[in-house]
Each structure stands twice: as structure tokens, then as C-alpha cells.
Length: 286
Length: 149
Image (cartoon, rainbow over all chains, first blue to last red):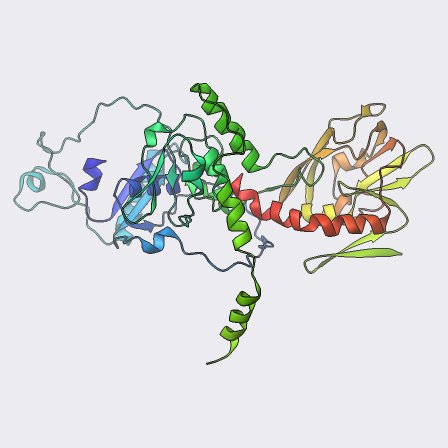
């Protein structure tokens, strides 16, 4: 990450994660940039006649991303799980570099040892032309990542999580403060997030791991409407949290902790007479 | 004669010659039992059905709410649950090969299964419409709230 933080220009990052998860993991690590659009996307069974039936009546909510000062450089995140062939990635990297109109400087003896340092390559003190291979054992880490383009800073997650994973920065904006305190396998906070803004890059369910497929082409599960026993996302989240609490020898808290805000907000959003009056005023062309 | 329920701009039509179960199935009394199928409300939510599978077979006893099968359409998927307690008499095997009758002829050729059971827990069309009034909001929330799961 330190190495990536040193790169200033456009960047292509290849990882075994959904691009959305990769992008927001980088953002959390202060590696920010605009979303670069890659043509390498996961295959999505899409029906072209897809019409959006569930119209959003509510006003657009301010998102945390609006208050972030994101630099104009682009970060392209490519998912290494899409193709087995390396060539596909090389082709896409070439395409992106064409698009970004930057010249790729091959690491030759001249430009690595030369006086003009290129911004695409950093000299590493090793023999010129040799890539650095970091021999670090890759452990599977489990942590949440917040998609700031969806997050509204509502604080449901910080209230719900009882393991101290979330915190706020100096501007009172939510952040994942202690990712390693997160309980492995528990995605409960992502279930209670009203904006579906919390990702767990390593979760088995594509929805929670940040797949674009799920966001755009979700199959609606009608089981509950057709008679399946009731168990909504909040119930599942409460059960998962209790399991984790008990695993570390704490008491289960059920629905009693961290869900109040949800109830209060719900009442607050009801429009009263004054709201209607103000809306009528807004309609006048003053 | 039919009753109409408005699902947004869509008009869901419910014939009054039959009864309805709260899990959005219609029930028509036959000689030896009740024939069930999807009511317009369910079909509208599902839209184009392309897969139907049963866990049940003839002569099997089912309890109300018990999972009896699965269905999938281009937009949705769902487990299927018994509308009431009773014994399965027969299943509409034609639908297993081609479930499209569920969409094109839901109140006749698109029937699902027959159960030998008492009609007591079922609703008249007018009562079912009241039930729909009550659940329509929850239905919309379920559809909109899916991303949180």
C-alpha cells in the first residue's frame, strides 16, 4: 500500500476482488482517484428489456463521496478472477494506456538509471529491468470496506457493530477504524446498512463482496411473500452478531442494541403539514 | 365477474368464482379436492416464469407453510409453500416441461397442483383484496429492500 500511495498519476490495479471492493479499499488507504472504466467486466446475464419497476420516490440523499476531495487522476481496478488468460489483461492495460494517452516507458537500462525519473516506474535499487517480487505470505483478511458513493454517513453500522470496527474521522465522517477487529465471517453490518454501502471483499455472496452484477441485475427473492417464514436482513444480522459475541464469551444482545436509530429515523422521515406547506411554497415561481 | 387490484399502474384481476390463499394462490373446488394456481398478484411479481420444480408428489401430506418447491423467472426467484394443510392429489406435470402457461393462462391451464383439504382457511375474492391492501406496502418494501440482504 505504501508503494501504491507513492504513485501520483493514473493507475491500473489488478486484484482478486470485485473492482468496486478494490476501489474503496484503496480509498480507505488514502489512494484516491476517479473511477476508471474498464471493458473487462464480469459476465452478467442481462435481459435487455429490463425495466426498472421500483421507482425511487425519495429525494436523492447526500453521499459521503460528495464531501470527499477526490483527485482527478483515474484508478482502474481489474478483477483477476474474470479471465484465466494473462493476454486479456495485457490487452486491456494497453487499451487503458491508449485511452489515458500516457506513454508506457519500458524499464530499460537507460530510463531506469537515467536522470529523468518516470512517474510510471519507480527505481527500486535492484538491478535495472528486474521486477520486485515481494515475498510476503498472503493471509486471508476479513474486513469491511465502505463504498463512499453510497454511504450517507447515517451511523447505523457504528451503532450496530459491537466490536469497535467503525469510527469517525475529524470531520465526523464514518470510517473503518479497526479493520482487524472485525469478526471473521460476520457481515452483519453490511446487512443493516440501509444503502448497501458496506462491502466485505472476501464474502461468498457476490452482493456483499461488491459485485456489480448484484447491484444492477438482482433477482428478487419473493419467498417471503409466497409463504416462507419471516427472516429479514436485520434478523439475520442480529443472529450473526449474537453468534460472534458468544464466540468471544460475551452475552448475546439480540435486537436490543444498535437498532434504535433505524426506528427513530423512520418516524422522522414522515412528512408533516409543515413539510407539505414548504413543498407547496417551493412550487411557486418566486 | 372479477375484482381488480391496482399494483401501481398494473391491474391485477381476480375472478370471484374461486377462493384465494394468503400466499397469492387461487383455489377452485373440484370433485375430490381443491385445485391451486398462482393468482394475478403472484404472476405479476414473478413475470416470465422459466423454471418450476416440486419437492412434492401425489399422496404426500403437506402442512401449511411447508416448502413444496421452487420457481424462477427472469426477474425473481422464490421458494413455494403449501397454501394449507392437506394431502397432495396431483401435480400439473405439463408445467414441468413448459411453465409458460403460468403466465399466459394462470387461471386455467396454468394450474399448479390439487390438494384434498378443507377450504376453511381460504378467502373470498373480496377478503383477499383486503389482504392485498394490507400487504401491498410490505411487498413493495420487500422488492426495494432486497439490496440490504
